[in-house]
Figure 1 (cartoon, rainbow, N blue to C red):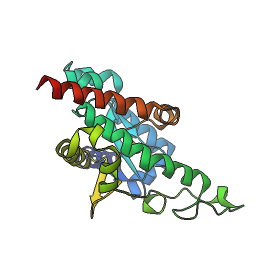
Figure 2: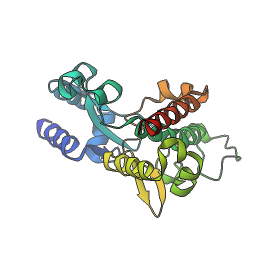
Figure 3: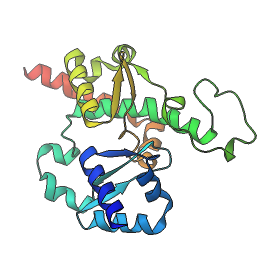
Length: 219
């Protein structure tokens, strides 16, 4: 078991995420003793396992009490520990809302993209689907047309989108934005989804737009 644990921990640290269908990842999800040993091994290093049944990958993150020790008390750390500017965070929230919210609805209903109106009386017995069958991509051009101005304009939009791709939140192909390995792991669905549904997205975009206007007037 020790060697398997060492391999999985090393891969999680080096690669940042591992597919949940990987043999060692699957073992961590179904073998209670192996999972407990993995969590203890990570906890000894100030880390925690990130996984949920709706995400296609597993990953590791800092334990909350370790964040200040690692990232310090800089301005970026006060709002997030990924070094994203405010308009970058707003873009991340918009992308999350457009990809993860409908994906989760399809996963819960056990339907694929394009079959949302079809009912299946045995759907609840099906395994949870992952990948592009339930997570539909969004057009970069359409996203910019809808939100580009309030997200900082063309240059800021392109820069922040590239950063989200680098961090593993999104995957970009043929000017389409797809779910990245960390998009459904690093953001707490239970906390953010109700806020989005209740209108927090509009508030975030309004704050971002106000900040951009203020910075423009100062310059």
